[in-house]
Length: 161
Length: 161
Image (tube, rainbow over all chains, first blue to last red):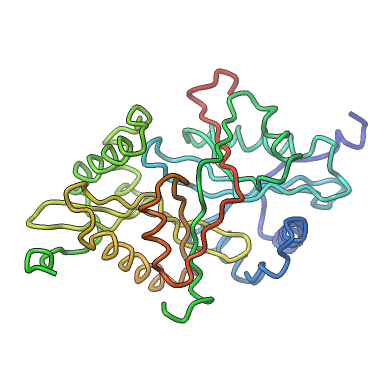
């Protein structure tokens, strides 16, 4: 690892990171071929993370004062296993991929989840995202399961509700 | 609908429902062919739902003082859409299936999610659970998406963490 890469800092997200985190979220949506699907506003996003009752938390990767990656999570409740970390998004800025930033973030998440006494972590990955799947497979004990279908209902899109 | 079925009450779960809810969870695990995977204790389960910082909530279906179904959810944070309801489990006691209890619970969830100003709901269903898939398809606007793989890491199962 070069000296530059050694200067990457992994830390908890703070309110002033909101703008840069949203930028990374938009970058991921573009990569996942659905940029128009990001309809949350920066204000709502900030309120949900740093208001009176936070529902999301994040680790960020910082280099030279700039955010180059982030991992956003919330508390999932598994009726079989109890509370777990649910990793919603793990994003590394395109220029920084392949340099170990994702691993630094994921290692940070494991540490955080263990500190919180959660039983584990879960997340989803697009079936065609082969590089992400290879990344997760490197972790001992990771299970990848294709047997599920995602269901969703968006109230804005349907007049009946 | 018979008079009996009309007497089904949908209400929010309270602490004294914990034992009966756990029983339904075990019933679902058996149906999903994984009864040994339910490792959460009743005490942990109760604490997570009714302690100082609840992480799960539930609606229950009651008939004649007995729980015949339940729907357990938590708050998911979608980085694209904002806060949503995540439906972890929707369970109807075997004897009561096909009598509209699932629909009463799911309708109750939609109402609850709208009250909370959440943007929608999401959940997962096993790809082989055809009857559940047919149930969800009856709701206007429901999207079912097969393109994802579930990832998970359980700390108890892996010594490295």
